[in-house]
Image 1 (tube, rainbow, N blue to C red):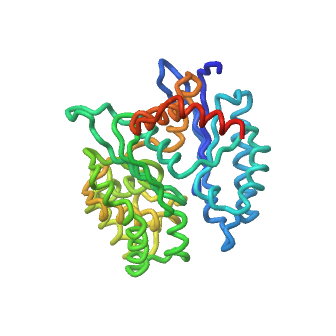
Image 2: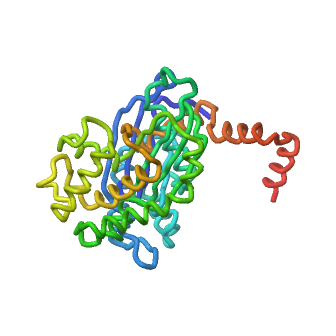
Image 3: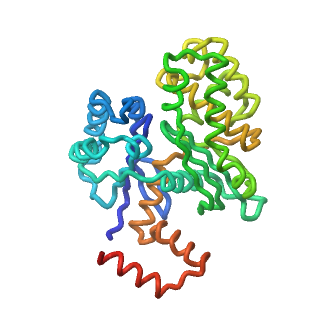
Length: 342
């Protein structure tokens, strides 16, 4: 596979579509261009789990713009991934055929675990090297539009990955359908999120971590609001989240005109995202969390870099599992050959 000095990642998320373009210099990726469009693909899901036509049209229009920016890129230098909404939508195959034709590149609908792995990879590259603590463990939390990923890892290697079916779009639509926020709705949303987390809390607390980090749009949006309102100097804090919850309930809505730091396009999905974040703090016993600028698309770029430089992180992960479980290489090769000929 030829080497490329410019790579591109496209993330078809349940809330927003992102295009990230970076230049490769000495094994590092430096940003060249970025495009973000709020599509709310998850909000276009009907009761029958089908993406409605209006949302599809909006998504295809966005992809047409990205296709213009990607014109001339070789196929090996671009990776396009779809997440939760495209995992669950019954008419995803039909939409993906149209989307592929408009964008001009293959679209890969990734699993929740793969999404978690890529999120961790992006966050790990964006964080400073661990200092003072040998083999520092990091917990990375990413609240997306339709799913939430939680990962524990060391340096660049994720060790525990989970993807839960809850996100800022789906929870805002379910628990705050008309945008009205009150104590009862917030309590219901938080309780639902805690129930989703219940199955993984024991394993995560047992594994432990030295540092907690939150990534992606929901975390950055909440951090901005906490900072602008004087609720926290930086990052996310337990006290800051409680104060923001009280402020939303007081105003009975997420109003950008009355809440400093709240962008209008984030307002409709803020209450669901906040409820999930509060539940994560409660269940994992967090008091303060740093916020990373990284997101899924950055992990996609670094994973793509590994592939074009002949170091595929997926192969490294498989090799690590083989060593951990004492797999016999000769037997694995026979199984591989059988699978390839079936």
